Length: 352
Image (cartoon, rainbow, N blue to C red):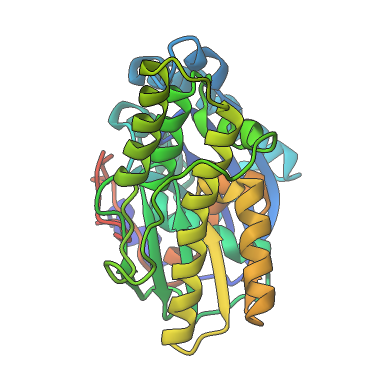
């Protein structure tokens, strides 16, 4: 009996201890989650400080950092949980999407660990992980609900029908919202990471810069941020060419408001169209404080329940990977030793 046959024959446990591993970008993370909802540990070792020297993530540096940190992250996650490796029921790992070299570090480590422990290997989509973070934020959350996904690479409104069945109502047709934040940060000469620095600058500004408003009924639930980004570039360049001063704070504030407004409105419109009363949110951009406050106010006004993961669960972490891994585990969606890293995968893809 080979490895896959052995682990597939194991009896499933609703209180399964899932060890999650995440290495898709510049954070090496490991976490232990019990029963898909209870986080026992959440270790994150970041190379962001090193990456900031170069103005962004350098894939080679990220891969080397993961290689140096992955064993320590996993060891600490198990230790912080008060467990031993013998207590681990299954190993979940991000296999895509992300930086290929970075992903390979996590996938290779997870495969070796799962094989040595003789436990199931669970290949997890990074984006599905961001979606599953909502289950860690609210233990009572159950489908169906609307998921607002906002990250560096994706912006989408997703109808979650069951734990495993989803329908993408609309997504990014050009720049994702997180990508737009990063590009505007560069225009405003802000350091990496761009998103948090735009948010900090925006707190000091006013929403007075004339930027185009994205039409709320345009493109269904799809998002386009290239026009807004270009408008910011044109505004700043025009002012500079005319020798006119402009407020970076006001530009940041006006951009942030326009970017966030359409996100919130489309998620709420989806609730209305599909007669749902819950919005859950996930992805790195959901850590933005202004977005969280704005969306919460909009949901209160519409009597919609809002589930927001803690900020640390919005940015890259392994607890969300373990949470999604638990769903794969209970559904019997195990991966075998041919699991490989993929730089690009469909928005809500399952492991192959």
